[in-house]
Image (cartoon, rainbow over all chains, first blue to last red; front, side, top):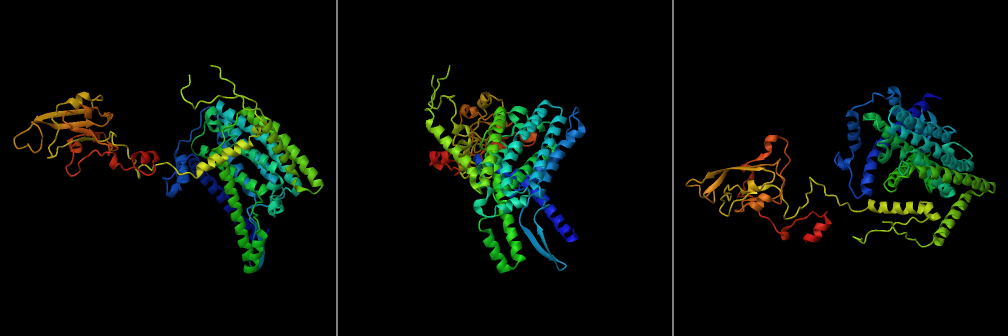
Length: 388
Length: 188
């Protein structure tokens, strides 16, 4: 690889890294603002205009707190826990294609560099691998704390992630079957026309994937690993200062990556309706280089719009739904999502055999019909008198 | 025994399939929360915007003067006796000749001190006073203090200034912040 491409890649990697950190920092601010607005409050508004400097103030507070390590804790693993969580969270954004390519000329040679840290043909698999590693950060930290609440939180996180990873993977297989590739860029390019976005061809898979993404990110309604009502603080009970900050930060980075992943897999990534028309017009009027680059930037903005919507959606759900009970969580994962995902794979495969992309709707329609029937046939709400 | 009509009987009937799917309930819940997102916030931005606390709010103490600017307090000590927190102390003195324009009666309080750390703002001093000399004003609060020697308020900070007289306003002069809907309705 020649030096120019290497430099361009280096710049892109640095920018993605910085943007990921920045978005994660401002997600904490957004979380508090969204929470406040959903609860008829105003939220942080003292640090800077509209409280925009709040993340900096929070980080400053985190840094100046005492960095406490319990005397009975396994010291190195205790330190390793948040490091692992942060490392895996940051690694996963490497393969996400944020936009189309950038064209530029350097030393009379024309280059075309995709806006993506690395383009590998197993992008989906890579993200899966890294995300499953993420649970080690929680496991190691929770175990090393030598605290029963931490350990319980860690065990919950581990079992929850394992359970939901299966359904997550199975719901994705339907998409992989339709695309025939594990490369994220190929999956996105497959969704060039609006009605071929995977959310329209795979509605059931989308619902399963979205729910499992919530579970994988340890977000409400599946935030059992850190549910403060039962487990004090869950796996990070014993953590303080920036180690705790790293855990929380890793959670927000995971949220960002999940949002990017969802919008790439199901919402066409950087595509938007009439993109080819816009790009064609731009390239005709501004030339193949400038026009193409401007089109790329518009796509980038669109992609980030989708990501921000899903980050907002994560927060919106958090302040809407109460936490699941642990047995409900496991039942939902094993008895509902895994069978449904397998059924989805089978039906999609059958549809692909006859070149029909929308066969997943069959299950959705059957489920809607069954639901409507069950509601209409249900007896009037019987009132059981309370025993006094 | 039924106290309110808000109590609801709990049913433990079997859920239908639509209810077991959670999704309809989830979507209706999301609709409820997003409707709150765009709602007007009832927050009052406190230090910048202050809410009217009502005409009978018990705030900063004041030692009243009469219409001619003479101190009403005669240092009878009834307020100090009535005070449940024992926050009030005073030293009485006799009015000299030529001081008739300063003090209303023959006896006056040479020293009148209220310990604001002790005061619980119950208003019993106000009720006990036979000369209508001490009041808890409704429009001003005792400011935050940071030092111990700021805590005991002497006559210099309690006696009414003639250019800044305290009049307890009635409802017609009420000014409410527009963010408090219940007050705007009740007061206007």
